[in-house]
Image 1 (cartoon, rainbow, N blue to C red):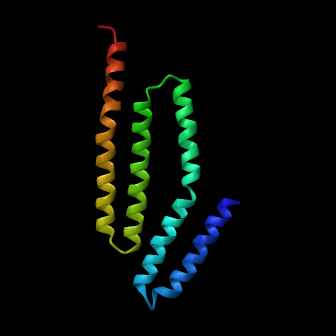
Image 2: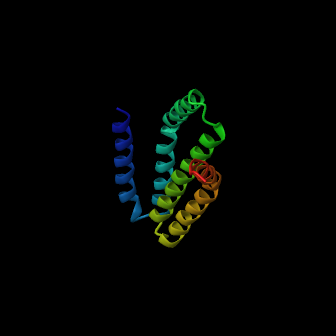
Image 3: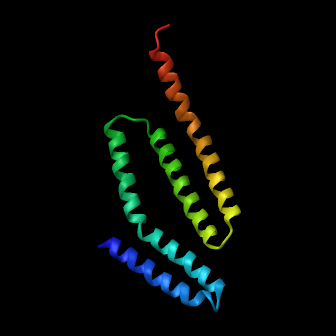
Length: 129
């Protein structure tokens, strides 16, 4: 049912944007951005429940919470970078959108270094000397 609401909001916004775009392009862009943010806010509850389930699984599995939090931050960076790039792309600024995506990838790489280090250390310990 939620998907129908999301698609409905998206279709209504699209029709309004197409109508407004010819007369007031700035309002059309603002409506695009507002719709994207509204749809994202509708999903915050779902995202928090997924995070809670992952945290519960990590506790039961005795996984260090620092690793889980880092992975969740990486996922968050990926989603935020993609969302921001799409909004900027909708405004016709492809080069800025590409820079946002590049910044997201670099931040993900930086945040992943501790996890990659632990994986490499674990593999090296498993290899017989």
